[in-house]
Image (tube, rainbow, N blue to C red; front, side, top):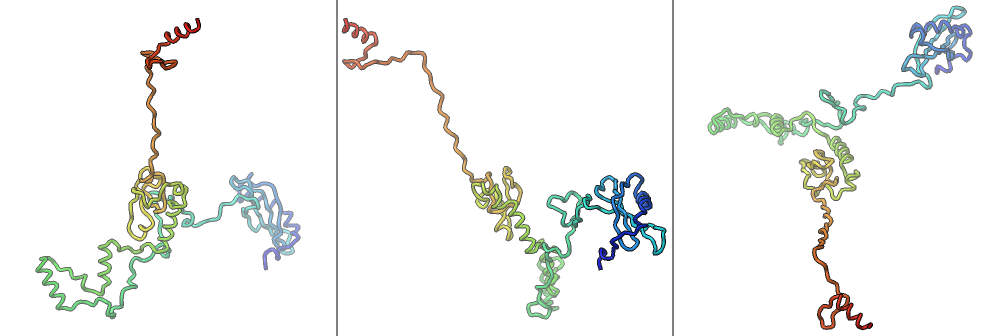
Length: 314
């Protein structure tokens, strides 16, 4: 049965009139002057009433002091039940608590910060579990060498190298040999990146420096043909590389082979427009311009031509 059905619809008269008792309790819990006006009451049950007072504490906008009073059956003395500070309908509340592992974002880590990983982190998997190792009685398992073989290896090793023979790699059931080899190759880690962790990382890098970014959409070519791309090994090398162009926005970042930018090594260089030479002006001599060609093929001066025209008109 819910609490709403157990409450009495009509508040107890004596409990409802005990406003001063409820205010004194609220001021004792808070401080004088921080308890505001009486804003209402709610019947909680038979002879149980909760009085609400406005809270004036800084930072508690919309909160209310709730003071519950009650009285015994057939008794006229009202007593105090509890006093709490409760949020109202328009109260300023803190955001819902989120675990730190979900609040953490890339770039939040600083010097000295520690980020422990969970034991069941889906991004990681055991580096070596020995599950693929054959049982000791299997014909595929490495059996310990015989005593004669050990003595022969010791004598030959001592004769050739003149040092203490190291035959621990040939002894044992194979587990120590695999661990030694893994340590020598730099692979002896408790956990390594799982396939899920690899895919999520690749999706994250593709989103930051991939083919769908605005920079790649406007690029003249992709990083797969850029001379500044540094290849990487492993399966990631089939889709990613490291940018080594200091003028690129992805310098030093892991970029998708389908990414690109304007700093591509083979970007076409726009030719400069030709600049015509300055004009040459010669003002030292006068240029002669003929009005009509001469009759004898020679040159005719303007004065002679004018004189002939005057004689013709006279």
